[in-house]
Amino acid sequence: MTIAVHRPRHALSRYVQPIVAILAAIFLLGIPFWVVLVTAAKDQAEALNPNLQLPSSWHLWENFATAITDGKMLAALGGSLLVMVPSVIGVLLLGSMAAWILGRRASRRLAVVYALAISGIVLPPAVVTIVLLLRQMGLAGTAVGMIGVYMGMYLSTVIFFVTGFVRTIPVELEEAARVDGASPVRVFVTIILPLLMPVLATATILICLYIWNDVFYALFVVGGRLDTLPLNLFQVASSGLYLQNWHLIFAYIILMSLPLLITFMVAQRKIISGITSGAVK
Image (cartoon, rainbow, N blue to C red):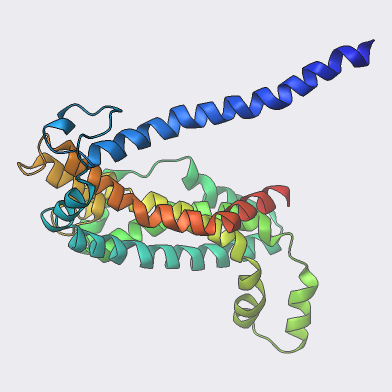
Protein backbone atom coordinates (compact mmCIF):
# COMPACT_ATOMS: atom_id res chain seq x y z
CA MET A 1 0.00 0.00 0.00
CA THR A 2 2.81 2.41 0.83
CA ILE A 3 4.50 1.86 -2.54
CA ALA A 4 1.24 2.44 -4.38
CA VAL A 5 0.74 5.76 -2.59
CA HIS A 6 4.21 7.12 -3.24
CA ARG A 7 4.61 6.16 -6.90
CA PRO A 8 1.97 8.56 -8.29
CA ARG A 9 3.44 11.44 -6.32
CA HIS A 10 6.90 10.67 -7.58
CA ALA A 11 5.67 10.38 -11.18
CA LEU A 12 3.75 13.62 -10.85
CA SER A 13 6.76 15.49 -9.50
CA ARG A 14 8.81 14.30 -12.47
CA TYR A 15 6.53 16.25 -14.81
CA VAL A 16 5.71 19.19 -12.56
CA GLN A 17 9.28 20.27 -11.86
CA PRO A 18 10.38 20.58 -15.53
CA ILE A 19 7.17 22.42 -16.40
CA VAL A 20 7.67 24.88 -13.53
CA ALA A 21 11.31 25.40 -14.55
CA ILE A 22 10.36 26.06 -18.19
CA LEU A 23 7.60 28.49 -17.21
CA ALA A 24 9.96 30.32 -14.85
CA ALA A 25 12.59 30.60 -17.62
CA ILE A 26 9.98 31.96 -20.04
CA PHE A 27 8.74 34.48 -17.51
CA LEU A 28 12.16 35.63 -16.29
CA LEU A 29 14.11 35.48 -19.57
CA GLY A 30 11.76 35.02 -22.48
CA ILE A 31 9.41 37.94 -21.84
CA PRO A 32 12.16 40.58 -21.33
CA PHE A 33 13.98 39.33 -24.43
CA TRP A 34 10.76 39.47 -26.45
CA VAL A 35 10.10 43.05 -25.31
CA VAL A 36 13.61 44.07 -26.35
CA LEU A 37 13.31 42.35 -29.74
CA VAL A 38 9.91 43.68 -30.77
CA THR A 39 10.69 47.18 -29.49
CA ALA A 40 13.93 47.23 -31.50
CA ALA A 41 11.86 46.39 -34.61
CA LYS A 42 9.39 49.28 -34.19
CA ASP A 43 9.53 52.88 -35.30
CA GLN A 44 9.87 55.75 -32.84
CA ALA A 45 6.15 56.33 -32.35
CA GLU A 46 5.33 52.69 -31.59
CA ALA A 47 8.37 52.27 -29.33
CA LEU A 48 7.50 55.13 -26.97
CA ASN A 49 5.75 52.66 -24.67
CA PRO A 50 7.59 49.30 -24.85
CA ASN A 51 5.18 46.35 -24.73
CA LEU A 52 4.71 42.80 -25.98
CA GLN A 53 2.82 43.73 -29.15
CA LEU A 54 4.29 43.05 -32.56
CA PRO A 55 5.24 46.09 -34.63
CA SER A 56 2.87 47.12 -37.37
CA SER A 57 5.86 47.17 -39.74
CA TRP A 58 9.31 45.79 -39.03
CA HIS A 59 12.23 48.24 -38.96
CA LEU A 60 14.77 45.99 -37.26
CA TRP A 61 17.53 46.25 -39.87
CA GLU A 62 17.04 49.97 -40.28
CA ASN A 63 17.35 50.47 -36.53
CA PHE A 64 20.46 48.31 -36.47
CA ALA A 65 22.04 50.43 -39.20
CA THR A 66 21.14 53.65 -37.36
CA ALA A 67 22.56 52.33 -34.10
CA ILE A 68 25.83 51.35 -35.80
CA THR A 69 26.34 54.57 -37.74
CA ASP A 70 24.84 57.32 -35.58
CA GLY A 71 25.70 55.57 -32.31
CA LYS A 72 29.35 55.09 -33.37
CA MET A 73 29.28 51.44 -32.32
CA LEU A 74 32.35 50.38 -34.28
CA ALA A 75 34.65 52.75 -32.39
CA ALA A 76 33.12 51.62 -29.09
CA LEU A 77 33.54 47.99 -30.15
CA GLY A 78 37.23 48.63 -30.73
CA GLY A 79 37.52 50.20 -27.28
CA SER A 80 35.81 47.22 -25.64
CA LEU A 81 38.08 44.73 -27.42
CA LEU A 82 41.15 46.84 -26.61
CA VAL A 83 40.36 46.57 -22.92
CA MET A 84 38.81 43.11 -22.72
CA VAL A 85 41.21 40.93 -24.72
CA PRO A 86 44.45 41.81 -22.85
CA SER A 87 42.60 41.73 -19.52
CA VAL A 88 41.24 38.24 -20.11
CA ILE A 89 44.53 36.83 -21.43
CA GLY A 90 46.54 38.37 -18.60
CA VAL A 91 44.20 37.32 -15.81
CA LEU A 92 43.96 33.75 -17.14
CA LEU A 93 47.73 33.34 -17.35
CA LEU A 94 48.54 34.90 -13.99
CA GLY A 95 45.58 33.26 -12.26
CA SER A 96 46.32 29.79 -13.61
CA MET A 97 49.99 30.04 -12.65
CA ALA A 98 49.11 31.21 -9.14
CA ALA A 99 46.49 28.45 -8.85
CA TRP A 100 49.07 25.86 -9.91
CA ILE A 101 51.38 26.85 -7.06
CA LEU A 102 48.56 27.13 -4.52
CA GLY A 103 47.08 23.80 -5.56
CA ARG A 104 50.35 21.88 -5.45
CA ARG A 105 51.93 23.12 -2.22
CA ALA A 106 50.19 22.68 1.12
CA SER A 107 51.21 24.89 4.04
CA ARG A 108 49.59 27.29 6.45
CA ARG A 109 51.20 30.30 4.82
CA LEU A 110 49.91 29.33 1.40
CA ALA A 111 46.48 28.67 2.90
CA VAL A 112 46.48 32.27 4.14
CA VAL A 113 47.67 33.45 0.72
CA TYR A 114 44.88 31.48 -0.96
CA ALA A 115 42.28 32.98 1.38
CA LEU A 116 43.56 36.47 0.59
CA ALA A 117 43.68 35.68 -3.13
CA ILE A 118 40.02 34.66 -3.33
CA SER A 119 38.81 37.37 -0.96
CA GLY A 120 38.35 39.62 -3.97
CA ILE A 121 35.27 37.60 -4.89
CA VAL A 122 33.30 38.92 -1.92
CA LEU A 123 35.12 42.19 -1.16
CA PRO A 124 34.15 45.01 -3.55
CA PRO A 125 36.99 47.16 -4.94
CA ALA A 126 37.34 50.68 -3.53
CA VAL A 127 36.65 52.88 -6.56
CA VAL A 128 37.99 56.11 -5.04
CA THR A 129 41.24 54.45 -3.99
CA ILE A 130 41.66 52.88 -7.43
CA VAL A 131 41.17 56.19 -9.23
CA LEU A 132 43.56 58.06 -6.91
CA LEU A 133 46.21 55.36 -7.30
CA LEU A 134 45.91 55.38 -11.08
CA ARG A 135 46.27 59.17 -11.10
CA GLN A 136 49.46 58.97 -9.06
CA MET A 137 50.82 56.36 -11.47
CA GLY A 138 49.78 58.38 -14.51
CA LEU A 139 47.46 55.62 -15.76
CA ALA A 140 44.09 57.29 -15.14
CA GLY A 141 42.02 57.50 -18.30
CA THR A 142 44.19 55.00 -20.17
CA ALA A 143 43.53 51.54 -21.51
CA VAL A 144 46.52 50.20 -19.57
CA GLY A 145 45.03 51.45 -16.31
CA MET A 146 41.65 49.90 -17.12
CA ILE A 147 43.30 46.59 -18.00
CA GLY A 148 45.15 46.62 -14.68
CA VAL A 149 41.90 47.29 -12.80
CA TYR A 150 40.09 44.42 -14.49
CA MET A 151 42.97 42.02 -13.93
CA GLY A 152 43.08 42.90 -10.25
CA MET A 153 39.32 42.55 -9.90
CA TYR A 154 38.91 39.16 -11.58
CA LEU A 155 42.16 37.44 -10.61
CA SER A 156 40.37 36.02 -7.56
CA THR A 157 37.74 34.40 -9.78
CA VAL A 158 40.33 32.54 -11.86
CA ILE A 159 42.29 31.40 -8.81
CA PHE A 160 39.11 30.12 -7.18
CA PHE A 161 38.02 28.18 -10.27
CA VAL A 162 41.42 26.72 -11.18
CA THR A 163 42.93 25.80 -7.81
CA GLY A 164 40.48 22.99 -7.09
CA PHE A 165 40.92 21.69 -10.64
CA VAL A 166 44.73 21.66 -10.34
CA ARG A 167 44.56 19.42 -7.26
CA THR A 168 42.90 16.69 -9.34
CA ILE A 169 45.73 16.54 -11.90
CA PRO A 170 48.09 13.64 -11.08
CA VAL A 171 51.42 14.84 -9.71
CA GLU A 172 53.14 11.98 -11.53
CA LEU A 173 52.74 13.83 -14.84
CA GLU A 174 54.82 16.72 -13.56
CA GLU A 175 57.38 14.45 -11.91
CA ALA A 176 57.89 12.53 -15.15
CA ALA A 177 58.43 15.76 -17.04
CA ARG A 178 60.94 17.00 -14.47
CA VAL A 179 62.83 13.71 -14.68
CA ASP A 180 63.12 14.30 -18.43
CA GLY A 181 64.69 17.68 -17.68
CA ALA A 182 61.71 19.98 -18.26
CA SER A 183 61.81 23.35 -16.50
CA PRO A 184 58.86 24.55 -14.37
CA VAL A 185 57.77 26.89 -17.17
CA ARG A 186 57.78 24.07 -19.70
CA VAL A 187 55.89 21.78 -17.32
CA PHE A 188 53.21 24.41 -16.89
CA VAL A 189 52.92 25.28 -20.60
CA THR A 190 53.04 21.77 -22.04
CA ILE A 191 51.29 19.72 -19.34
CA ILE A 192 49.27 21.79 -16.88
CA LEU A 193 47.86 24.48 -19.16
CA PRO A 194 46.30 22.11 -21.74
CA LEU A 195 44.61 20.16 -18.95
CA LEU A 196 43.12 23.37 -17.57
CA MET A 197 41.33 24.29 -20.80
CA PRO A 198 37.79 23.23 -19.69
CA VAL A 199 37.85 25.29 -16.51
CA LEU A 200 39.65 28.17 -18.23
CA ALA A 201 36.89 28.23 -20.87
CA THR A 202 34.33 28.68 -18.11
CA ALA A 203 36.36 31.42 -16.45
CA THR A 204 36.88 33.14 -19.81
CA ILE A 205 33.15 33.42 -20.51
CA LEU A 206 32.40 34.72 -17.02
CA ILE A 207 35.15 37.34 -17.10
CA CYS A 208 34.27 38.42 -20.64
CA LEU A 209 30.67 38.85 -19.51
CA TYR A 210 31.71 41.00 -16.55
CA ILE A 211 34.07 43.21 -18.57
CA TRP A 212 31.84 43.47 -21.65
CA ASN A 213 28.90 44.80 -19.64
CA ASP A 214 30.84 46.91 -17.15
CA VAL A 215 29.96 50.59 -17.09
CA PHE A 216 30.52 51.50 -13.44
CA TYR A 217 34.29 51.09 -13.14
CA ALA A 218 34.92 52.10 -16.76
CA LEU A 219 33.05 55.36 -16.16
CA PHE A 220 35.38 56.33 -13.32
CA VAL A 221 38.63 55.09 -14.86
CA VAL A 222 38.40 55.84 -18.59
CA GLY A 223 35.12 57.74 -18.91
CA GLY A 224 35.41 60.53 -21.47
CA ARG A 225 38.79 59.34 -22.79
CA LEU A 226 38.05 55.88 -24.13
CA ASP A 227 34.70 54.57 -25.33
CA THR A 228 33.53 51.04 -24.61
CA LEU A 229 30.17 49.69 -25.71
CA PRO A 230 28.41 50.13 -22.32
CA LEU A 231 29.90 53.60 -21.88
CA ASN A 232 28.93 54.59 -25.40
CA LEU A 233 25.38 53.30 -24.86
CA PHE A 234 25.14 55.32 -21.65
CA GLN A 235 26.30 58.46 -23.43
CA VAL A 236 24.13 58.17 -26.53
CA ALA A 237 21.07 57.14 -24.49
CA SER A 238 21.42 60.43 -22.60
CA SER A 239 21.91 62.52 -25.71
CA GLY A 240 19.33 64.08 -27.98
CA LEU A 241 19.67 61.36 -30.64
CA TYR A 242 18.56 58.50 -28.39
CA LEU A 243 16.40 60.41 -25.92
CA GLN A 244 13.06 58.55 -25.76
CA ASN A 245 14.15 56.54 -28.80
CA TRP A 246 13.66 53.13 -27.24
CA HIS A 247 13.79 51.40 -30.60
CA LEU A 248 17.38 52.58 -31.11
CA ILE A 249 18.40 51.86 -27.52
CA PHE A 250 17.08 48.29 -27.70
CA ALA A 251 18.63 47.79 -31.14
CA TYR A 252 21.96 48.88 -29.64
CA ILE A 253 21.49 46.45 -26.73
CA ILE A 254 20.82 43.54 -29.09
CA LEU A 255 23.89 44.29 -31.19
CA MET A 256 26.03 44.69 -28.06
CA SER A 257 24.84 41.37 -26.67
CA LEU A 258 25.22 39.32 -29.86
CA PRO A 259 28.99 38.54 -29.67
CA LEU A 260 28.81 37.04 -26.18
CA LEU A 261 25.50 35.33 -26.92
CA ILE A 262 26.91 33.61 -30.00
CA THR A 263 30.08 32.67 -28.11
CA PHE A 264 28.07 31.14 -25.29
CA MET A 265 25.86 29.18 -27.68
CA VAL A 266 28.89 27.76 -29.49
CA ALA A 267 30.90 26.94 -26.36
CA GLN A 268 28.11 26.09 -23.93
CA ARG A 269 29.09 22.42 -23.65
CA LYS A 270 32.66 23.24 -22.71
CA ILE A 271 31.48 25.90 -20.27
CA ILE A 272 29.05 23.56 -18.52
CA SER A 273 31.58 20.71 -18.48
CA GLY A 274 34.14 23.04 -16.91
CA ILE A 275 31.73 24.07 -14.16
CA THR A 276 30.55 20.53 -13.39
CA SER A 277 34.01 18.96 -13.53
CA GLY A 278 35.40 21.58 -11.21
CA ALA A 279 32.50 21.12 -8.81
CA VAL A 280 32.72 17.32 -8.79
CA LYS A 281 36.46 17.19 -8.52
